[in-house]
Amino acid sequence: MGLVYADIEISNSFEKEAARRGLLDKDAVKTMNFHMMVDTGVMMPAINETIQQVFNFPFMERKRAVLADGRMIECDVVGPVDYRWQNRTSSCKALVLPEGCEPLFGAIPMEEMDIYVHPLSGRLMGNHPDYPIMMLK
Image 1 (tube, rainbow, N blue to C red):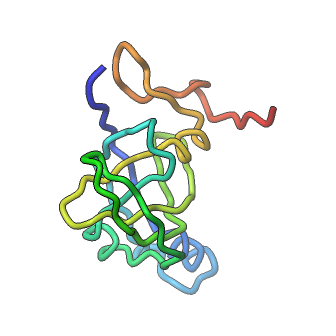
Image 2 (cartoon, rainbow, N blue to C red):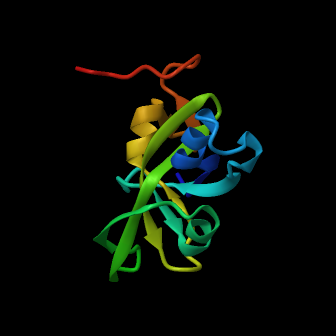
């Protein structure tokens, strides 16, 4: 199986909450679609500095990360970031990668969304086709 990509919608959790409370106009909530590489070997999703500049997600901490080329870098961790794929959503932290790195969609939101990469088609699929089911066992 080759590289897997999916169209993922990203939005700012805090802006959505502010809009729900009437503190921000609903039209002011930034939402954008990104063609993200799906990497089941990556736990935490990652955005790049350009995406961070657009959304201005709150800084949470700094963590070390190893890139695909083997380099270790320090990254900001921001969030929460809201992710949507079809009728499934997740809200979690994201690493901020340097400018030019492609965004990565990792295992944490995939687990919450109850989705997987189909090995033959190389596409995202829902474990349960109509809606996500959270496994608690």
